[in-house]
Image 1 (tube, one colour):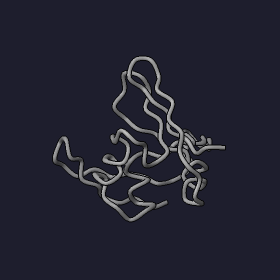
Image 2 (cartoon, one colour; image 1 turned 90 degrees about the horizontal axis):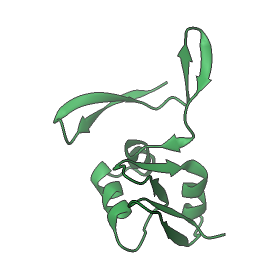
Image 3 (spheres, one colour; image 1 turned 45 degrees about the horizontal axis):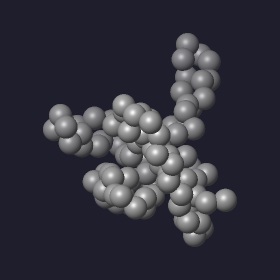
Image 4 (cartoon, one colour; image 1 turned 135 degrees about the vertical axis):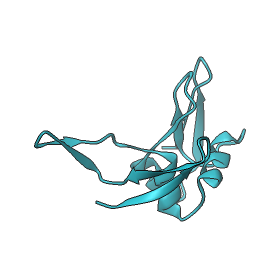
Length: 106
């Protein structure tokens, strides 16, 4: 398990992001969500969190992600990022309430 300090741009304080794929709760191994967060994607590509945010906010989608209606957080699936890295184009699906899904074309 690796943990690294990450700057929280809103609160301007350091916090630790745990990049483990599963967590232990009372001795049980509980699988974590299949989704990656902006900080995880930034670390994966060696770019800033701002760079990732800018790619999710553009009119023309530039990176596969999901934003649920009414939410500000973007979620990423590793398999979709891998397909995008392999050269797949992206398709955009706008959701009611301001959400959107950007995924590789199949």
